[in-house]
Image 1 (cartoon, rainbow, N blue to C red):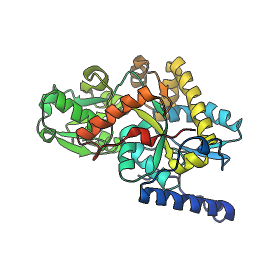
Image 2 (image 1 turned 90 degrees about the horizontal axis):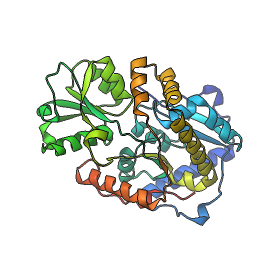
Image 3 (image 1 turned 135 degrees about the vertical axis):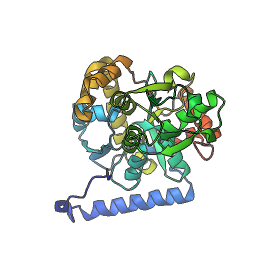
Length: 344
């Protein structure tokens, strides 16, 4: 399935030559930065820059960006700053949103798992985190069908488990196996995006599914499934955090826009924290899951805790998470998260 927006034939050739030239130069700069491994400088020289009057924001169902898109208040907030918002998506997970960002279809990826973003930087993508979100309670879960005969993580030996590569699904399964002293090779990791994983789980082509909300909650209800491992209940530390990413050159060239965007998202998070039921109703309207799933999600009473990318205490927690991902083979090598943030 193609989640990138299709081109509008009526727009062909209508973009000013100057804008085209600027985008080509920006693209060349991004490619050069990725190839050389050099990052553009942070600090005062990057402040208060703005080279655009619009911003393209990716979104995925169930995350903060989705709620912002549906409510429309973020668009109004940025319009008051003479910034027009265009939404791009929905994306099934963060990896294709990052691909769209690199390809020039969006300026920000959505609020998603930091692990795919870290993996992308290791592969050479010059992206930065502009803000972080530690959403509680953590509700990512490994589920099985109630009639599967699987009652615990130990029963997964020799089974097929659907996960998203380099994301919460994969490393939640890794953590679960470790907690029960099981080797990673004891189970078969089946790498699928959420839509394909749901289908495979429903058709019993996989025995279990490791996934985040609301996908796991929808599947639990739809396929009469149960939890055998829950991130919030069964782990004593956060494996991952949510981050809002942009390409470093975009963030440097448009630091004033980035600042307005993250400020608008802070306002959105405050609204969600104070209106949990209303927020879940917003998501349900577009995602179209039933009332039982909606009520289960409301019962979580999930709260957003946003952190600036220069918050040293948070960065220490984030570094611990990144080191765990590296030591457990989710990330191919160590990363220094403090080098992957931008000051705006």
